[in-house]
Length: 361
Image (cartoon, rainbow, N blue to C red; front, top):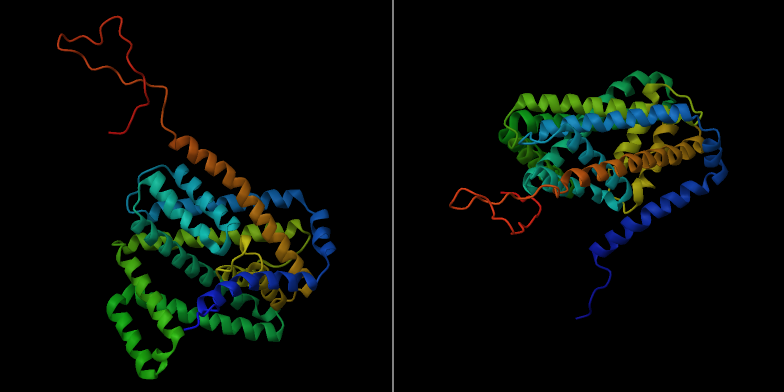
């Protein structure tokens, strides 16, 4: 039997590797490299600092949310801040969003959280990220519809409808739980939609989400998590706005949210690229062209803002890794005191007690 070299899995992996490269090449072919350089030559460092501050605030909000999600809220908020900053940096420098897995390792090493619990924390964080982005997008889209071209408004309304449907499904999973999921499955089966592969994938994801939500026994805690998620994305969109202003580009905050949301959603696609290059710029270009930007400005600003985000995450990430290394290093400046002998005294004169690092009990 002849061995098959082009298996579906191999084709998928090759496509995931080539697609972002082809997207970047195509986008760069639509502009000149000078268009990006001009934006950086006219950079306003004051707005860059403001954008960096908002980016830092975003990570502070992520740290508060992480504390709320952890099953055992031991440890300091400073260590939680270092963990989320490190994870975010790895997300920006590792391909295919494999940096997400760094959270499991960091929680295991610095908080002694099991891999299963860490996985639930990661899933819930991403669920609430989507809910927060979707909620903010819905509000911004409705406010910006009268200011965007007609073709853009139609696309935005279509995306808006899909987002509302997914929000409805998530609320079914959260509040109705198993009975709601069974009801949803019954509706899909009777309508004939259950036979499609995409539908089965959605049901599988809904099952995973339900399992994650069942691990959280306090609904009130989920409300706090959602509140922190809203603050996370408000501060991140504010950082996007400041970085856009630093490049000399002006837009309304509602148009920025609509345009940047397309980049955020496309960056979630696990392309094998660094910093989401390709996916981010493609989504950014589509989003900002929908709200009235010309193609050249949309493409060049997408590359420029993404580079500013990556540089900010690396700068903060260096601090976070140094902090985690210093705080996790064992103490070597204390000696183990010798146990008293039967006479009640310590080690007799002339002996040399061995000094070694203090270990864990």
